[in-house]
Amino acid sequence: MRITDYELFEVAPRWQILQLITSDGSVGWGEVYAKWHYAGETPVTASGAAVDQLLHKYVLGEDPREIERRWEAMYRSSFYRGGAVHMSAIAGIDEALWDLKGKQYGAPIYELLGGAARDRVRLYHHASAEAAQTALDDGFSAIKMSPDRMLERIASPDEVERFAQRVAETREIVGDDVDIGIDFHGRVAPPMVKRVAAALEPYSPMFIEEPVTPEYEGVFPDLAASTTIPIATGERLHTRFAFKRYFEAGGIDVAQPDVSHAGGITETKRIGDMASTHGVALAPHCPIGPIAFAASVQVMAVAPSALIQEQTLYRDDGWKQYLTDAAPLEHSNGYVALPDGPGLGVDVDEAAVREAHGVDLEYQRPIYEYADGGIGDG
Ligand SMILES: [Mg+2]
Image 1: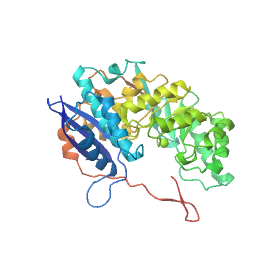
Image 2: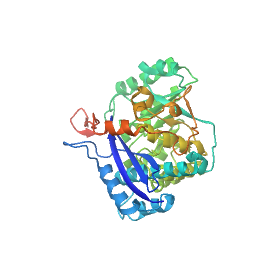
Image 3: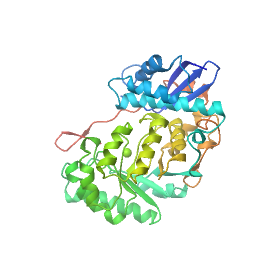
Image 4: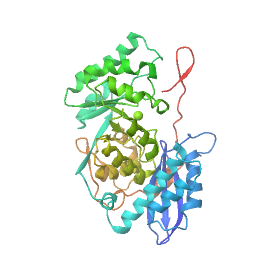
């Protein structure tokens, strides 16, 4: 069996769905995290271009069963490697190869990775005070919120208090048996991070996520020593080598690789295994589409230190149009059961994906500015 063809579909709101086709007519699906966003007249992303190059150079004409060999070829043969664009492209291809393998053996991917370590995967929902009750009504027992806006480099006591107050209100609404993750999302600069963490201590967050951006990895051990709140990071780390530095330096409690950023199922499983050896929990990032989410569930099924899975699917029903049957990914009381179908466990509706290709694409990251007009992260 050989990989003979592929198509990359760009579908709303900002999802790239990859189809690999083999010589015996089998089809595997993956999701590529869009990198460098839609610009100009045509929907071309850097990760889409990387997919084209990697497939033509290292995958087409090859045996899809040799995932590790294809992965090494795509990674090591790219001399300048490991960045967001490269690893997102590898990720989508890797997911599609695993989907093909699962279908070939008639088994879910987690069976081929060693078998399930749990029955279901716990999920959290994005919700702050205003939406918290809805999340609880939907059955979730964990939510995640962010500061409304970027804090100044050294924020005033009022700014810090406003943010802490929002967390306090949310805690009041959800009670003490619901977990609240707090994603700083680059909105807190390194000089402020300890003070903001201290202000949140009374509300016992599940974790603080990306307390600072990855450029400031040296901040983590200091921050962790100053707070009892578990520290999470990793959505902008793309390889096990990037995670290795954090694990060795200490200062993180929860690793958050994104399966569609960090080299796919193959690399994210490795990161999860490494995390467990350092006593670090795994909570994969996933704010994109149903294929990426399905791939995340496969990794979480076998992860030794699985904590909780991110998703943004359940905000509306948009994702369901791309599947022939949404049932395998529906949650029940904030958990998704391990799908028992082969491969990723979902059937992509090819006709729907084809029809949606290139229509209503959105997502441009805004520019975030401090009060003086200087540029920050957000
Ligand atoms: Mg985040």
